[in-house]
Amino acid sequence: MAELRLGGAHRAQRGARPGGAPGVRRGGRRPTERPNWAAGVAAVVWLAFVIIPIYLMVKDALQTTDSYLDGGPLSLPRHVTGHNFADVFDRGFTRYLINTAVVTVASAVLTVLLAFPAAYAIVRSRSRAVSGIFRLFLAGLAIPAQATIIPVYLLITRMHLYDSLTAIVLPTVAFGLPLSILVLASALRDVPRELYEAMTLEGGGSVRLMWSLALPLSRASLTTVSVYCALNAWNGFLFPLILTQSDEQRVQTLGLYNFQGQFSSNIPGLMAAVLLSALPIFVVYLFARRWLVAGMAGVGGK
Image (tube, rainbow, N blue to C red; front, side):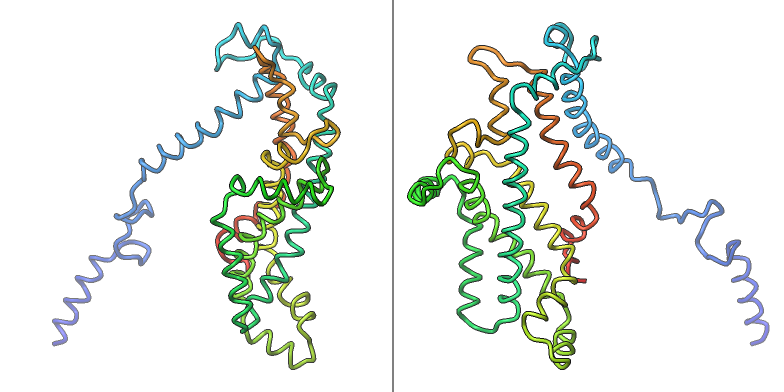
């Protein structure tokens, strides 16, 4: 028996790999690890789809109209100029950006202020009426804004809010609430019930539980909802088109029409305006990307 044990130990010692890790080659790579060429090619193709439109937008915004017409779509700019950006600001695009910023901030703030207490009530309440209201909000996800534009127009005109920024903010908030409540309710359900019970034993009421416990633990989802609502309001086109008329209340999505004529379009000026329109929301994403990814991954309540 002793000889058999020694023989088995000797064979195990001969089969062992250097470093004490059986099955690992000298290069440190396991036999099952192979380079995923398909994923690499797909990543390169995806990167090309992202980089090429950005390159075209920046290139066209930095060249004259004659240079744009003479060169090809992927050619380098021959004469780099900032005249297009100056032309954009001369046409009143600054006012359009300010109006858009006001609509965006107001819509995001109002949506969060209304959606968070509603989501908290839905999660903490055991009432059937509250559950029915939650289902009613979820039904709003299936209603497109285009199907309700006539009733919304009638409501805005009867409230004497037509041709104002408030006329854009109110329907934008209304259509942003269903998804916002759904995301926040999912995040609040991840908060352990023991934390609510512990704070309740310390004398905390419903309002204190919401603002002192639920709110800090839902920062990721709140950021996700805020960025979503801001992006939706910043890129909004239907409500500004139908509910505003004067140039003073125009937003940047409608301001882009100034670079499109009846028979021709100023493509370099249009690309400069599009670039200026995309920069603010891109900066917001850079600062909020960590919370945005966490909230979209469903870990907002952890």
